[in-house]
Length: 246
Image 1 (cartoon, rainbow, N blue to C red):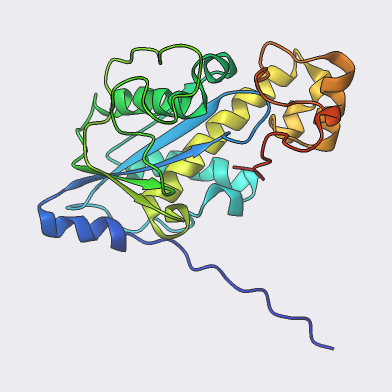
Image 2: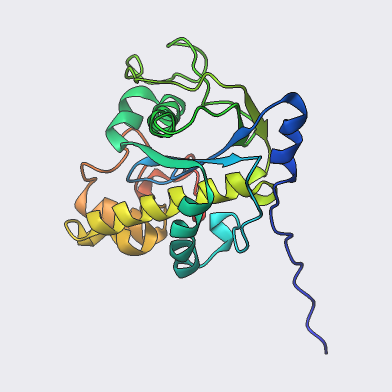
């Protein structure tokens, strides 16, 4: 019996990015986050800016969840050479606990954005998903669920942000941003694992595996856990969403 064929996922292209040229835009930023569903460690936001006057397709780039770790790591220097500017920003578990996840995402994005501005000011941003958590906005609005005001950042995104569901699968700049953020966040978790071996962060990268939850039950949460989240196995229904590799 012939095994069923595995459906191939088309590689992302620069078609969406190039569509912005009609509006006179030249520098387009792709943006994606990783770590949103983890129990420990930061949430991390990658931004990759392409120059529509010079950019050519970059072979091998995919959404980070579709790539093996070695492939992702090999892509990083290529992405840095290919882009006109790129950066990754992080918001810690403590900031997630204090300010809420959406405010922390915006903080991490602002840190990446400020770094990109050292080189270029993007004309527009393509953001993976259906909710714009990146744009500058007053504190205390919807989704700011933490107990305190969000931390003040030196530069928040003021360029037009265009949300796009599954942009990491279709837009090469967004896929590249996901790769940079994933590699940098994974490296942070591996580094932290050396001092906290019980939690297995070198393998699970802070995500909600059964073994990770069991270790939290046994040892209690560390300073790198999101303590406002439901962490251990005993918490049952309502535990934080598991995000597979993102």
